[in-house]
Length: 281
Image (spheres, rainbow, N blue to C red):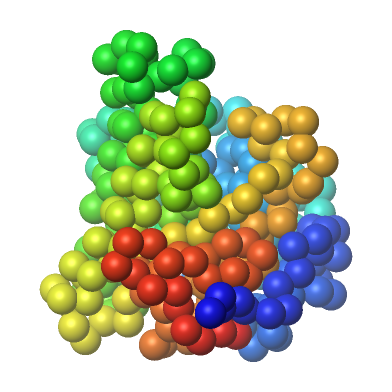
């Protein structure tokens, strides 16, 4: 039987965040104030939308990505909605470079202390050849795996130990329905997103085992189709991913861990992981 969290409204515009709180109950919305969230891929698309929404809730935001200009554009978008930018910090990094990630994590700790929330949204699109798995070059394979899988692992490895040692860990990895698919022409992307799914669930299981007293909530979210750099023709706002993201990262202790969700509220299974059997409200 399919499980769905009802009441997720994907089409709440950011201009009205003070009234609708992206669908969050008031207490959950208020719980985000004063926390620190590190958003990877915060310069565009889903990452920018999540960063802006969290800033509106009073969360301290660390915006990371390769392109500083895009990260500054995200701060401009916050200000366009009347959100003060004093609590937004830009920390550039390249997720494919381990030294860059470690230096960024050290900078975040020095400037802001503990991270409460981690959202990973950085990714590159499928390779251009029509039959990538049998014709792509090694460097093309390396690029998509390094960015879409290894990059997420580097960020989690750098950020999560401090979160876990403090007793609470909220992580959302943005994936794609490609992680459940075998569509010809985008096989490299399918593989990368499937590996990202497994990374999320495996991290969740490992951290529960290693930190049994911590409140571990590491989950994977399908953001669906929207207007991003990968899909500029879409008419759907990337803010569509915000309500479900906030529902997951604001969940009280004892919430889902190692589970899979869609932005519209559906709960997915993956491999040996059954669909989460309770609502996330």
